[in-house]
Image 1: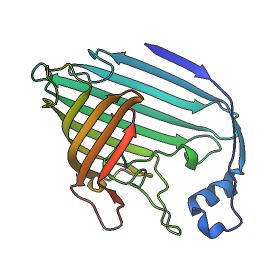
Image 2 (image 1 turned 90 degrees about the vertical axis):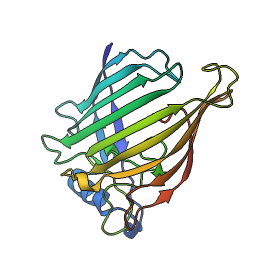
Image 3 (image 1 turned 90 degrees about the horizontal axis):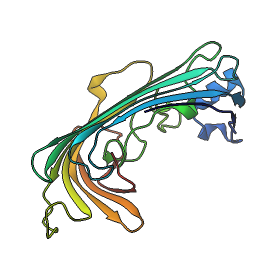
Image 4 (image 1 turned 180 degrees about the vertical axis):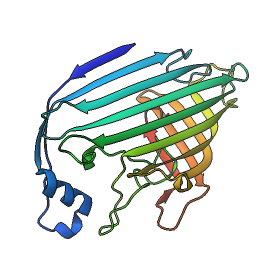
Length: 240
């Protein structure tokens, strides 16, 4: 299926009086472009879904491609391109391997020299690379040391869906246990694969009365000095 739409966005970037606490990346962008923007973003997406279930699938695939771009004449002229492919390889009635890959790229055009900071990609956390603190990976501001995100994103995940010993009948329960390997990072201007971060661990998906809850315990494989780690994480909604 395919969809397209056009919208209007009014954005204001407010700077605190204490500029020492503000990312120099944000300050530079505001000095170059001002701090109030009226934009007309056009979004388009294409989805192909052959999974046997929306949640707790064990065969089929999901492919999505999407773009967002402001039309010429907007205060900020930029675009983003996104791709994701999720594929299940069944090994039994319940057991399966899932492979997931996501790519993202963005940039400015016309009078806007780069992707706006509030449109950057971020990585780290229960929905991207588990075992690392949420949105903590990638470039950091040289002054504040805070993560600033990037204009390029690479994410990958391999998961082995395991038989659940808590189920009385195979495939009939509301929980799923899996072992996983995650990897990914975000970059600015140039991709360096040597900077990819990875982790491995166990995950529990529970279709609770309030929605899908995902719990994970992850151990980073190649963390570096300065990385912010978080072994136990959970999220409302499926992580991948």
